[in-house]
Length: 501
Image 1 (spheres, helix red, strand yellow):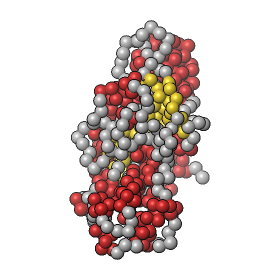
Image 2: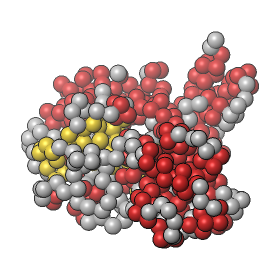
Image 3: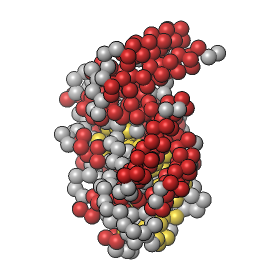
Image 4: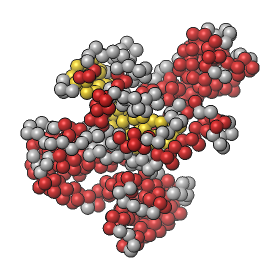
């Protein structure tokens, strides 16, 4: 990879400390994409992490572990490593139920973070970072989260060849962000999202590397959302669209999801015994079942053949919305199996749509995201060295790299970040076009013509390529022109791709 080659080439031209940082950057380039799951306290982040991984491993109850950053990554042996602030580690087994132990048996004030290794196929392509909930953290948790995710501040360089704190933080950040919101997007969610730097040098999250999910979508009162027609899921989609307009351009999209149902369906929490209970509930009279589904209290206290304790456990796995969807499926198909019922619940959770969006926004461009993050790390490391000559040498090398045709993807990500952050000011319609071209992997979506035939797409791409080339040459400011040249080339490459047989 060209960024890795740049690091290798510069190693002999920089200080030992910076060179050590470059070595870490190269290591990260060869590792899976790191995605931080961020959000406010009680937003259901850990539940969503479990659903994405497909195993109930992240603690969801408030405890000492939920105040620590936990990195879930692939390993050949399942284990938990407690990483202390002094760099030492202590290995722990998972609890009997397969989750991280509720109590670590150590002084958490001395803990940096947890590393959880799992023999899990999902983690072969993506490292998932579960973070403490924002909004009610103690100062130590805030500090640990910021450090591990790369929200580093410039600090004076020390005299050791080991990485200093600034350099270590600069190369330790997540490269992408999955931000979890609930119904009420607060005024400071923009700032909270920005706090989760997308990688190095405190680069803010943007449509290149961040999406959001509206979790607990089943708790939305459909009647309060205009245009929902009283349907909960339709209300959730409409509310997610509204939140997307609030959080953009920091996120590529906002998708509704029900993390609790997704976790139960994906992690083995939903069992054949649960399916049998749902079949019993489906046999109840309509009036009785409708009354029970009014509230959780009524559902668990109503006198019926299914024991109250069994109903409570079912509620903890599916909530009322999941119970209703499952019962409807059983009544529509009385012979439905437990496996098919689990699939119904998974579909109802919205998790598949989130995974598909993750694949489009993150997985399909993982190399580009990592490369852009690596370049930001390289810049931060050079800046932290305090040596102006070294800083200039690194800057010049990066400019040479970006000038090469094969670096177009990096230039496009850079242009998208500049426009999304407001560093380059463009008219609203042009800014939206840049965000659309840079934030999608699907050609139709990139061109704003979903479902169009290839000849129409080709003609539109060529027309827009010419327009952006003209804009770059006539009427654009120098900063706008730099972005316009990148967008022109993006359209031209799209045109070439469409024309290829």
